[in-house]
Amino acid sequence: MQVSLVFICHQVCLFLSKTLHPWAKLCDAVTVNQRRSHRTLTLYSYQHRLFFCALAT
Image 1 (spheres, one colour):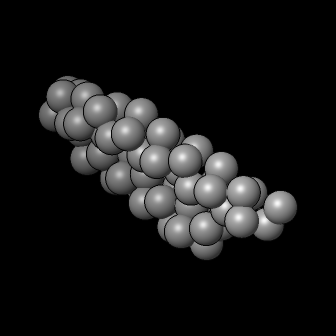
Image 2 (cartoon, rainbow, N blue to C red):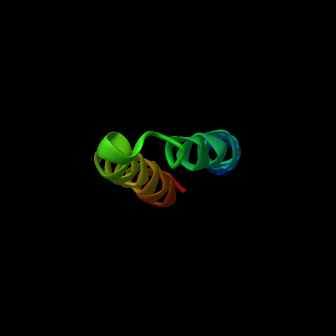
C-alpha cells in the first residue's frame, strides 16, 4: 500500500512539474515593469512545489 502511494505521488509530481514549467517560461514574457516580481514569484512557487514533491516521495 505504501509503495503504491509513493508511486502515485511521484507520478503526480512529474505531471505537475511538466505542467508548471511552461507557465514559468511564459511569465518571462511579462512587461519590463512587472517582469522581475512575477518571475521571482513564479520561480519561488515552482521550486516550492518541486521541494514539496521531493519530500512526498
